[in-house]
Image (cartoon, helix red, strand yellow):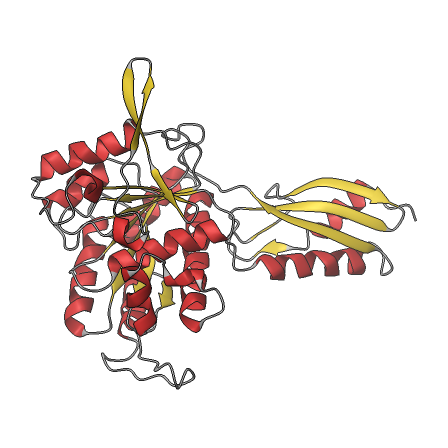
Length: 366
């Protein structure tokens, strides 16, 4: 039997994307099929380079060729990606997805999660930017080791356009760049929103798959103004296991579900989930309570995106301007990498839904 493209495509219809619940042929993920005897080459275009199920999909493709085409056929699968967006050509300056990182209260490690999320996505091949919109304590310049840098200005059509600072493959703009290191940034809501709009519309960002927006802690008018100013794909909520933090995280979720906001919740990240001493890396001590965010995620019917350990090196890495996720082989780095994969996964799921359906689901959740 001669192997044809039609036979290969029919075989690959047996491979389902576990998140989108459809086969990869129907989803248009199979491209560039080349057949040379029993050598079959093709590309599978994922919805994100940070797909946590990449190896599973690849393995299922190889098995499908062997089971439904020819047991002696050799499948060469090129796993690539094209990050999806719901905005179909209307992306703001080529930015496909805005992900806001929020918390109901301060001190839960929101900015640490945002910085490591951005680095983790960039490490896996995504084009990533960060906007530090935390007007109360902009910390991205410290975390990305660019405290002494300033955005450059470029003249375009007689207008001064900002060029973001770049560190570890991530493009960054922060409220902190516009104040002295020891100067308090005291801005009212409308001024902060205007500054955010300027960072978006008067900056050369280029093509980005993900823009991470680090919001101020808490819930209030300024948060509503900030999220209304940008077309947000979804929100990541950061909490610690204590009841007081979980109560505030629940308020943050409720804020995003307000009819006037109606932003999908990508999930909850539990930071400081457990303590692991360096000399006992396999031990876990739940000093702030156990699985509080997991229970909250179940109660709210939203995903638990990750459990980040309380490890001294996470704080130290942020202080010296080198996010801990860059230490790829450590348990804490793996926790952040897994979290980033789950965030990218949820973004792809949100983008797979028609806007009307997504709005209906959000309204139902309210």
